Length: 422
Length: 180
Image (cartoon, rainbow over all chains, first blue to last red):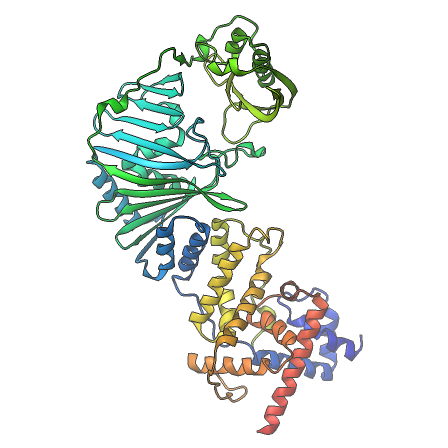
């Protein structure tokens, strides 16, 4: 290698991780005074332009950036108070990262104070709205749907009672048992802690919301950030969809199977929840899907709230073990779906009730004038749903419909029953 | 003599983060280097932090668009470099410090700031592309392949710019020494 070539390659000695094959250059420098002087001159020049001061970020730098990111994450949206908080980041007097390992952290103090302040709650009345379908379950999120009103009442005390209502369904618990009316006339019965409320259960425990969220954060089901400003505590919780999403059918379709951000605001003096929002985190950005618009504490609640005046001729949901067995039962998700559609296409109520867990055929059966199955796909699972989804394409009353039918058999009788998606 | 060969290496390949949690980790690992890089040009910690904060926020806003970028760090340095240039353009009438004696020891942060200003004055006399490469390599402590990603050209081109830039600095220093 000539001196000219060596001097051209000297730059390699100034890389962070110089290439391995430098032996030839080093050998040349050891033997050639001219090139060695050139190397020393380059080294000296590089040394002169090295910064002599190494700065460190301010202690709160990262916190400030994260607050800014949260602001971006939550905008554009109607939560202007959150934006105001974030914009006034410099005024935030307390930002508490959770998981304090030692000592009495401000978060733990606040949690204790909150629990104490809420322990004397007599009742709560929450008015909220959610982007969902009026007639579907309480979990469903439909980001493109209009807001649907949701109202929650809870009577605290030795015998708690509650009522949860949206246009298409209402559920009550009277202290001993629960009942849900799927309007117009289908009812589901349950115990004091039924499964049909889904995520709304979290709001029913109004007195334990902060406690429960912080417990979830410690269990690493979420990340949480607590800040105080101007007489309010703001708890921001980042939730990641729970479950297996190799098939992502359920991803972002329900609260528990969605990536979302929850922002709670508590009054700093009373520690009471004042408002709460949920934004769905989608590829296209964050979409507000739920918000509490009003909360009233310790109202006198009418006892009638915890009862439902049932319409005549109600159809009751049946436990799988009480369903009739008039024919061979389906042995797989696909067989259950096939039986369901066959029953609909032939208007065969008996066959339908083999997989449809109610005391009588639903009223909508009569509205089906024609139904043909174009195809049934292979069943799949998604999220944490214990059942299966069967892809289908049908023509019904002259229109084509493609969707996934939900069927499940996680009941004591291990019987395959319809669970939604029609 | 400052041993540039032993400078902090590029710390692995980081995909462009897509969640707030991932950004949290990215900020943790890169904040010092990016602020140092910005500070070297701006000579104000507050301005440097503002620039880096803006860059992280922009990186978060644009995360979906950059989902396929296989190493976010060089891009962050490019964004910081561009934003620092914008800040410098907005500054008006800032005083230039007197150049320190070449080779003299730096005694205090104030001296270091003066020295940094002198370095920047020197780099400002280089072709912009050569100065950009030198800043990324020396201020940013990026290896040449990361510098190449940052400025969007090949590694040989980056090395060539670095070499010619250092040559030009030597000439400027010789001229300065001759003038004394």
